[in-house]
Amino acid sequence: MTVVEKILARASGLPSVRAGDVVEPRVDLAMSHENAALVINQFQEVFEGTGLDAKVWDPSKIAIIFDHRVPAESPKTATNQKKIREFVAAHGITKFHDVRGDVGGICHQILPEFGYVRPGSVVVGTDSHTTSHGALGAFSFGVGATEMASAWALGIAVNVEAPATIRVEVKGAFPPMVGPKDLILYLIGQLTAQGANFKVLEFHGETIRNMSTSGRLAICNMSVEAGATSGIVPGDEETIRYLREEAGVVGGIDCVGPDADAQYVRTVEVDVSALVPQIACPHAVDNVKPIDQVLGTRVHQIVIGSCTNGRLDDLADAAALLRGKKVAQGTRMLVFPASSRIFGQALDKGYIHDLMKAGAVVMNSGCGPCLGVHEGALGDGETALSTTNRNFKGRMGNPTGFVYLCSPVVAAASALTGVITDPRKA
Image (cartoon, rainbow, N blue to C red; front, side, top):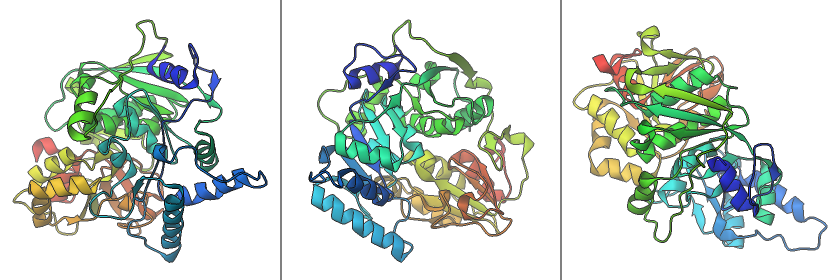
């Protein structure tokens, strides 16, 4: 069996699972953000007319994180957040991260950071980028509000069809100024946006073994942009190190790997040693080009952050390029650390000072301009260069805007010039 087939078999109490089997696995963690307000409505409907108390199956296995609109930008959002707070208190949900400067952040950073995700677990979330948590060896995937309401009530994911798996074998060492974001953009460009539909991307190879958890989170986060149900890196020594040293996990950690004779629908091989910085061009994430094809493109807004590239190493890379320099006139730069903890660490190390001194505006941890409903919307016809994960028409709040996706070093180098710039020549 593949990693995901083994995880599903164990969670479903079955001796084996094959791609195409429909199972109902036990859920180890169920995550929502502000859309928990909609899940609450669906959850209450589940119990209507039953005479049963509307109680969640296990409050310790539900996580709710406010991140998409923080602080609330409208009375409607504020009222929904109030509704969720009341539900959380009534049901004793402890994995709740409110609008706070000490334990706040983006859901896909909070879950690994606080040790909520373990290898071999089943994680569901009402957000498409729940694929992120495969970085820790979990089968983690997005679901709708109705499916989440069922999970809250029953503790299982209903009618899950076991996905087939594409094995991605990655070898080589990254050249300077090239990294995991370039790898996943390149892979999406090769697979296309539908190339992994209803499948899992299972990452292997020396490059992955040598990759930090931060890099693994970036590649699993964007696996969904190739249509994948999930991305997954089988748990290994780096997984254990991260959970012990950075997430503070104690107790047993059970890593799950594929069988030697696991069946894959396809194997994709990538050698990163010759990889160059990659850019996803408007208006599709699979519209990927090497950077030399878009050099000099005028940029009005630079964004560094999000659940894809808002971690400490991302901020460190950007600060190193910007230190002692200035963001180009006519270009604005927004920085969104992925969590309050990362924000604090970046403060302690001087990265925030370097970024602000250069002219960047550093915002509170959250999803900010990525989805375009809160901070950092684009003006008519403006162009953004961003480390986020989507560039569809209307992303960043304006259907007449243009969004290019890149790595943190490309974003930082381009901030200095006001045009898309190769960081290898900055």
